[in-house]
Length: 345
Image 1 (cartoon, one colour):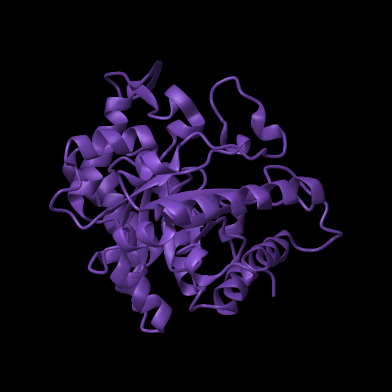
Image 2: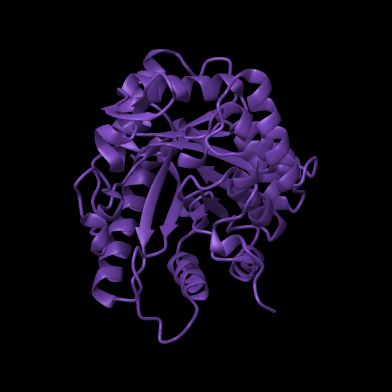
């Protein structure tokens, strides 16, 4: 049964994503191979608030939320731009996009969030993020596999033996089922949402070791294509990216929206220190011009513009295209995320 499943569900070797991954693994990486994913799976954690608020005539947020149709319209716009390599969505949005033939003619790989542990339950009034994550899955893998062959699985490590063993057992069960249905995956590893005891050790190195240990006993056929994780600074990124580059491709998640400079600094620093993938949600969706912010990210990664130059060029684009910037240029060009500021020698 498994042999038949694997034979009929081999990934397409001619997709842009597959070609990029092959070059990265072989050591032939070029900045044009940097992978960008648009993470529009926010409804899996944020519920009806994920699409964000409606705006009034002056462009100010109201207390009314946009419908999911607006969220999916943004997905279709990004797919049509062909600037991203992966579009990550919920299973329900994936069904809608496939039904509308949104991927036809575009070299964008669809992906579905395949688990929704409780630490991503961040909807209005919820307090789940104050507590350690519990393993949980809504999406059925066979239903997801009918739409695509790539999904996201997420874990969080707490240095708590019972919680971490439960998470690892759930991940092992997922890999077994994914193998049966022919589903590839990439692995998201969150930092805990609150302080944990690492005995005075650095959180970044703890997370690095937890990841490497987690995957050391996993055969190549069952390993994630790449990682999606929080950027814990240049030293932690360099360490993990250099550990096993042929088998462990490191990618960064975007986190909060931040300034436009934060967005460009994050992709620039991640790429410079060995990261090969950026998977951004709010940094793309809540930008004044989502397509232009991704185009600018590529210019930064490819060395065509510095992060500061890219902020200025982005604001000039907003001015010419009639988009109202969320912040004045002098504020938007500042680095506000502390992890992106120079590390002490």
